[in-house]
Length: 461
Image (cartoon, rainbow, N blue to C red):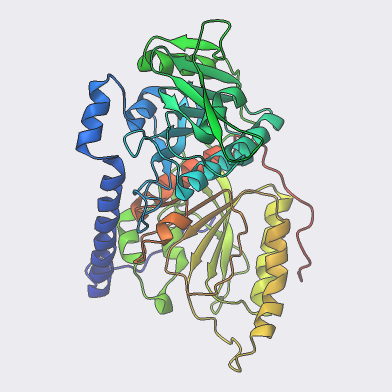
């Protein structure tokens, strides 16, 4: 392999300026994260604790294996909207009894765990990640808010059932709306004695009136598989359920158990996150998250706008496609299509790094149709590619930029100025955490078999 080099000088004024800009953006993001973690505020949190109940993140911490990581998804969803930051639900991926699981936990301190459009989308996205990556799903339910769009949760759970992916539901308190159907739709159901109460809504024939039917656990004859004495006991029983899954990953394990760390410090990524697109070199980013900073570049060229190649991340073989946020020339598009064909032939997941830039030799006559025609083979190849796609946006995207990685398994970004981007990704991450976050994602996608396809498009060798 080729060891990547570096040309960054931490004493360079441009380096220091870029670092300062990114730290300022991270400070804004951290403030939003603090707001999400605060839930409904001190008053409601205190009242919740006084009832002997746990907060959603406390429930998750007790559910997960001790000292194991938790990759929270869309933690600042609804940021900049009229709804509470975090969307009154916590979702993410963590390890339970050595099994990677998707976890969804309502926050009852925020309007009783009310479900708004951001909540519904966040839950749907988490369930979709569980389905696509064959990850067991654990729902920690307590929600008395408005219902989500009809059938939204049921559809995602049905997909998991069809794929024989197990689901666990722990009911901690009063629950209504779509969430009320989770106990019945889950494979394993646990309810907390004295607190859990499920309200199912049944429309009358007139379509106007509704009635609420309380479902109270009543031992073996009730709807619960197991009754917990308190919340901690409920989480213990949930861990017990996962332990009995006898769950095994279908994808290959990492190639090496102790992969080498990158040769270059990740601190430089703070400066690269705010770098001028005109002088941006994606190889500087790769040098700071690939194992050993080793990278085999595919069809390298001094004037190449698109950088592609092979490497490893936490021991997992990967392909990397670094694309500028502009239309590609015919040669660049064919290069990308050829690369995706090889990735599918070898069942190798692909990480897409997206950053804006100017393409040398692009049309000057404003012929947008020609640009679309040249880029079409790549769009087609991405749509047909069956290996896992991971997307990391490392710069601001101009309007109208085509989304080349359609429906990726995971999609994260580095901090950008507008708050609305935070809701569009699975999360906005500190650039220094890039290696860790992508590594957790790669481990998750290998819970399912890594499929490849023989052909993803026509290319010119």
